[in-house]
Image 1 (spheres, rainbow, N blue to C red):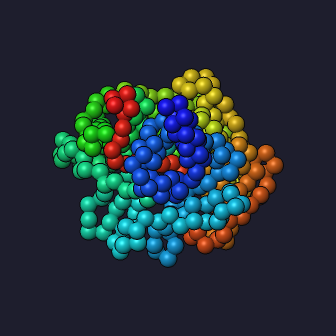
Image 2 (tube, rainbow, N blue to C red; image 1 turned 90 degrees about the horizontal axis):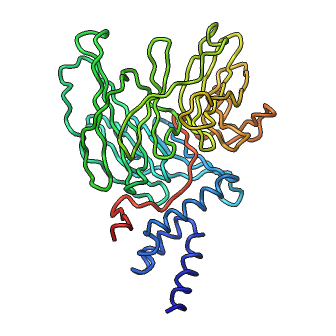
Image 3 (cartoon, rainbow, N blue to C red; image 1 turned 60 degrees about the horizontal axis):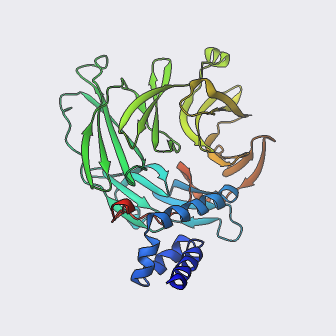
Length: 378
């Protein structure tokens, strides 16, 4: 019996080091392998190892348009693999796909909003590594037909208490005219139950901005709220399913004279980050990155980085390594890596990526989109 357990431990120790592509093959080999690879403890250990490796060899998933077609490409820093790997799902090759908005990643999974010509928008969960896709059921109807303007935002994250992945949908709008804002409505989808339910949102939040970057951190999702000259963060706890607001850093002197052109929420090194972009024709582009050193402690906001100024308009895509960021330059400059401390270009990527609109730091996982198991219940 002890010998059998030792053999199983050795097999698990060997399998947990393999890439997802190999694990998918082993999963179909026999029932015993499938049982082992789909255990929560195995999935967690495998993802933890992959995350540790990705610290020094990061990858980005780039959503981009080339020749009017949407593509999804994995950009890798691994010298032993291809620098660019096409991960575009087959459904995006179909004619009529007009736009895609990605939320995530969360443990290697994404939530995708897909807009197709002459079709209703579709929500789906996607694991790029296993190529598994799950279409979500239609959201519940909400009492907002009398509103004259609707705006919808989504969030996607993990509930560690129930081992569940959830999508939250918030609808805001106005009635009669733009001055009569309505209280927002919200509902949440559970992958375990494959269903939606209405939830309370009592926090005033009418101008909510979908995050351009990853904004899920430790079971909490974050959106930027803009109201006139004031900004704050709307937070959602995936486990307790409650909303609350968090303040941003105090307005700096530069903001008073020249407000940022764009702001958003991101995650850097397991900390919440606030990205501020400044642009003027005379000074060019400059970015400020603020970090919340202790979560939900507003006094812990610290300005961590300043990127630029650059003479033309640049786009910040995200954090590559601790001292490097992924940037996109103007028309004739491809996707590049810039060392923040030295303010110099360290790598250029091939220019065949086309025009990007989403970029996410990505770690592959074996998380399934069906048959979620809570091992405490078995």
